[in-house]
Amino acid sequence: MDLGLAGRVAIVTGAAHGIGYAHARMLGAEGATVVLNDVDAPALAAAAQALAGEGLSVATLPGDATDETLVRSAVAGLNERFGRIDILVNNAGIGVKPAAAVAELPLADWQRMLRVHLDSTFLWSREVVGPMRAGGFGRIVNTSSMNFTGGGRPGVAHYSAAKAGIVGLTQTMAKEVGAYGITVNAIAPGYVATELISTFSDDMMARLANQNPVGRLCQPAEVAALVAWLCSMHAGFVNGECICMDGGRRDFFWG
Ligand SMILES: NC(=O)c1ccc[n+]([C@@H]2O[C@H](COP(=O)([O-])OP(=O)(O)OC[C@H]3O[C@@H](n4cnc5c(N)ncnc54)[C@H](O)[C@@H]3O)[C@@H](O)[C@H]2O)c1
Image (cartoon, rainbow, N blue to C red; front, side, top):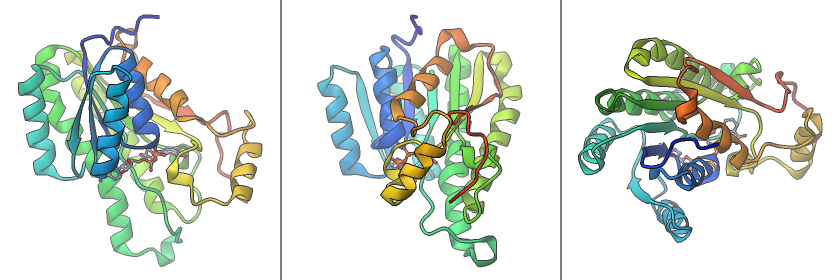
């Protein structure tokens, strides 16, 4: 299926590693020019070099995705450079290390979690509306988690709250911009094999795989394939959705 992504300009936040890198690779392979953002500048440069080596059209935008000044000037600069912004994938995120029950959760940890996941999603989404509206086309895909759709694992209330907030933002914004040809959707992956969960023990990884109805963890490229389709010309009537990609697990038992 031709996704109609050739010539599109896409921004992916948190693109130096894991799922974000897979998004950049998938969108680039489908013909989009991909602008990779990440706070990890050396890894970002290496990621872009690897993708360029595959013949993909990429650019980099190092920096913190929660920095309002950076986001505003980056989107304006990209719009000036490319004359369009078609796709935004809000992916930047951090894991929970260490887990803490609400009764023990420091305010700073709570605020950092909301800032990285929710503030960044809000900031980038707000800035791209103008260019997308001018182009009459836009695809925004936000990253929630099974941690929210599955009901929330004890010890990660700040992560679950951020991912819940992302769905609320998605549903509301979808109604605000749908008439301009812009869709806003979210994905809610289950456990995906990336560095984010690399602190889990081998034993825990094996159990998580065995507990899943599919019998394994999700791969980043599988998430990227779903997102590429959501960004395609075929997905114009999918709007305000949060799509679970958890192998059918749906709940959050732990142990
Ligand atoms: N791995 C999973 O099991 C899983 C499951 C559900 C949802 N998610 C979500 O998917 C997204 C990607 O996760 P991943 O597993 O690829 O993680 P990862 O740790 O492999 O990659 C996250 C990337 O985000 C970048 N990043 C972190 N803070 C940033 C900031 N402030 N500004 C810019 N970049 C920043 C990191 O440098 C890194 O490159 C996250 O939003 C995460 O919450 C992951």
